[in-house]
Image 1 (tube, rainbow, N blue to C red):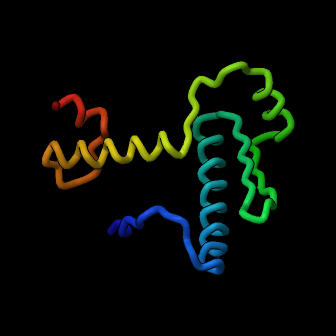
Image 2: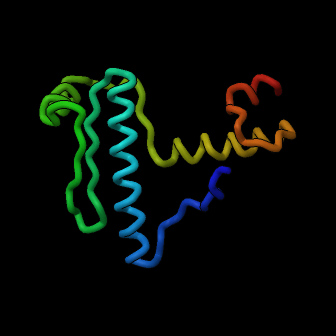
Length: 114
């Protein structure tokens, strides 16, 4: 059985926020590792927490990956928080509009039916 969806907003309680940060940081690093192994890609993950502590993960040498990054003038794909929220909102509205009860349907396939 799946977990209940939570609303994504800032956690007000400092202790709960720190616990969530620690757990999700590890989960994010684990996903980065899995992506690098499964898809044979280089990954550098840089995180600054609310107190400006630096956390990093790199599938290879982080300096090598960052040097490669600086050599590019424009990324193939770039996302921001706003972009992610727009996709989620579109997906939610599309699923409602299609009359689909489950959120398993992708935005793309839902939009085709319109």
